[in-house]
Image (cartoon, rainbow, N blue to C red; front, side, top):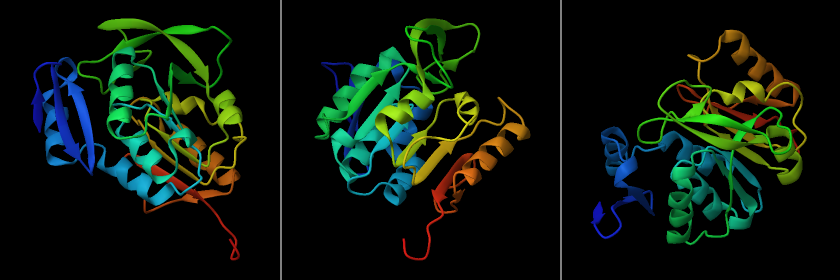
Length: 233
């Protein structure tokens, strides 16, 4: 780790990448994970498993830009679309993309929901640090953010891989089949925010789309799916 005093940032080396984190967003827990290499380790393994040259990747919840950068290294930066709701993180993500040579990644600001009317916004809760920020939480610091419809994103980007950590908003994304050439989907589920019926709905919808449980990318609250390929695939 190197202190970048002139910018109030700390620079971490993790998995071959350089990630800058502003001091204002650095909780002790996040800094420790960045220092010991455990930050988003499961998500990093999922990228290695799922992303292949030429694949388009949709990342919901970009964080520091770590996972999106790894994905861009595996495919091409122009194939990666990252979405982040927290406005404080946008310059951090852009800086980390540039720092690691993937400045061509597309970054959109907004909170992804099942359906969004054009121009719609909502109040977004900013947690201490940056993890745990989400729609619907009360109190604390609130900012108004654009809403982005999930199925509209699928139609526009047509991803082969969907990676998501959206603090419970994923419950809205499984109302109908996804219109995209999906090969892998990896998400963090949030059982404290919804019941077993929602988890069953997620699994059932994936099964309806010829997606099956992927033990390689699944671990704890990280739930991975892969397409069921035929013998000739």
